[in-house]
Amino acid sequence: MRFFYSVSIQLYIFAIRLAAVFGNKKAQLWLYGRKQQRNEWRRLHLDREWIWFHVSSLGEFEQGRSLIEHFRSTQPDKAILLTFFSPSGFEIRKNYSEADLVLYLPADTRANAKRLLKNFNIEKAFFVKYDFWFNYLNALHKNRIPLYLVSGIFRREMHFFKWYGSWQRKQLKSFTRFFIQNETSLQLLKDIGFDNVTLSGDTRFDRVVHIASEAKSFLEIEQFIQGRQVYMAGSSWEPDEKYICRLIELHPEIKFIIVPHEIDDARIARLQKMLPCNSSLYTECSQAGFSDNQVLIINTIGMLSSLYRYATIAHIGNGFGSGIHNTLEAAVYGIPVIFGPNYHKFQEAADLIESGGGFSFADESEYLSVCESLLGDFAVRQAAAQAASNYVASRSGATAMIVHEIEA
Image (cartoon, rainbow, N blue to C red; front, side, top):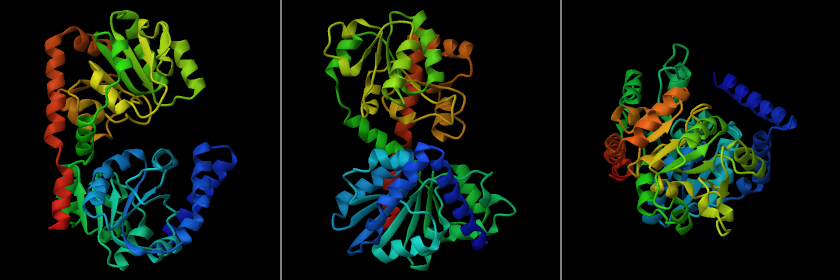
């Protein structure tokens, strides 16, 4: 079975190369980044003990971040290695100061796994959520290096739980302990014979609580808002914005702040053309008339997690695409969150709906109904806001639980 797995990895690499040839930017970055880092992987780093964190992309990085920063502050003599699989995470966090090295994870071959452990004196390793690379797992296991899964999620449709998944189930024995997010994952692992499982929850709750405690204030944002209600769209995509445009037409008394997922000039121009009114750009906040417009577009990065503090309600983007962005960054401020229908793979979104702090919509009628209820009825909005706040507060503490168990 390992032979077929190795073949599948080579086929995967071939597919990425083919996509790069045909102009896929993400595939090109995937290949170029790894090529640029070959010398870094060949250089020996055995002079220090390393703690290795591997994440797939940006969301998983945020789940591992609180642990990274814990070890950085409590064990400064240890070096931190942070690896990414995806360019979308690496390109944003490649200069992350709390890690000593931030690198792409080389393709999951036996040779690459052996080279990593030869070059780095790994003391312990953390994989986040569900990025399983079996040659790396096997190499860690053979070298008796403690390996932990952080904020893990398992679903019944995963190959570990199928009749043909015996080899994949065997690879899970590489983990010293699973720290998982929910009862379903706990039971699934127990059903296939794993007792080294702790229901710790999601470490992102600790991260967003910390972010909110240090949220920045923006004088120019406050000047734009002028004390009005604020509809905040975070990481929005064009399908989200079509709905938002309708709400803008119906509520000229409300201020709208839109933070698009992509902020290149062409994307911003399309958004401004779509809007039913004039808009201001954040980068032009010093110009006359900046605060007079109803809509403000944030065309810079790094502000969103702090901006939610100004929101009356928050619209989380990409619910009509592959899946919604981070709902917790908004909910931590005690504000209702709304999003499109593609949220079912996100435990926290389903939990927010169940608690009364989150709302989903599938069409314009549902969208306007949710928005009118939240914007027009103070009691409804306050109940939803309190539910969102309580939900986040009740789920924090995963990082401390994981640290306590590892260091006990």
